[in-house]
Amino acid sequence: MLKRTPLYETHKALGARIVEFAGWEMPVQYSGVIEEHLAVRNNCGLFDVSHMGEIEISGEDALAAVQRLITNDVERVVDGQCQYTAVCYPSGGVVDDCIVYRFDKKRFLICVNASNTEKAFKWMRENGQGAAAVRDVSASYAQLALQGPFSAEVLRPLLTIDPESIRHFHFAVTPIKGYDAIISRTGYTGEDGFELYFDPRGAVAIWQAIMEAGKKYGILPIGLGARDTLRLEMGYPLYGHELSETITPLEAGLKKYVRLEKPDFIGKDALVKQASGGLARTLVGIKMSDPGVPRAGYEIQKAGKKTGYVTSGTLSPSLKLGIAMCLVEPGLKEPGTELECVIRDRKAKAVVTKLPFYDKKAAAGAAK
Image (cartoon, rainbow, N blue to C red; front, top):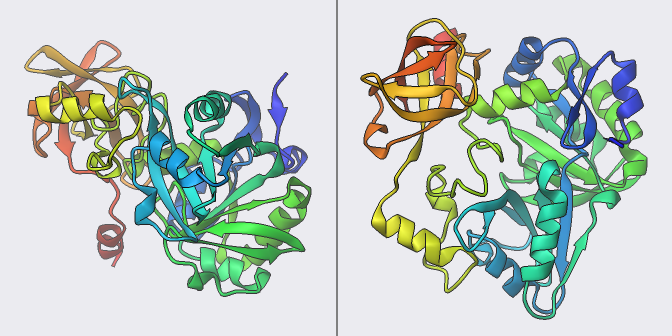
């Protein structure tokens, strides 16, 4: 049986198109993907992401357990800060990519992908070390993401603190509509924004309060469709596409989140070997020169020879052309390299481009 978030009836009342996603009934769009996408880029939008999983690691050895599990180095952040990372198998393949919230050295909250919650929890419970308790606390949290340039203005009247006081990739615990909430300055869109975790019983009231506060800023409810196009324009990975049990974080271009200088973590030996031996493939971005929309799984060619495949692709609402992330041979990673994407048995020209595809400053300059 499919799961539902506490806002399922709210989404239905808003006319959302509901689809199955990672075992949940979720809104894929309301007014339309392009309109929702551009609302986040230019104004603000509100996402229900309560399907995401939350795993808490606590106790005397919590810090050591987290350090063993993740590729990044959580000792590099302070209490009240969060960090993007991957959790790997000994092979270097990825269990999941996630965000770690550090409350103190004895308590961490890890936000994991909905499709991987059960798998990630089992892995962390079995592979964390020492006196650390690992608990799946997903049922204790609803999660909303408020994203877009007016996000802080929308949130300001609803909080007892100034949202601007929360720095990028930091968080605060503060009340909203009578419920204590973890509010982090994070997101999956490339825009300024916040993610809020709180008691599911407060979901409807908090959603309605944010939507009401955002009316004068052009806020819209945003579905999974625009969430995907927004992250793709920024070159952000999606598990099962750019990362998987067989695609390592190094191949996915996430080297800065892999701290090989750490004494030890699961997957380190394989990743050290891969880093020293050279990658057999690497992730690149392409923009279509010819008409056509690249999609996941499409073949990438160079001079008629297969050299890789599309991991994620779409028609960019901001750029109004086809874009994709692809795994290709490492010799083809330089921006400007010409490739071909096979779209329905037709070869369409494309060019390797630097990520992210969407540059906010450049877009603002072009609009003047």
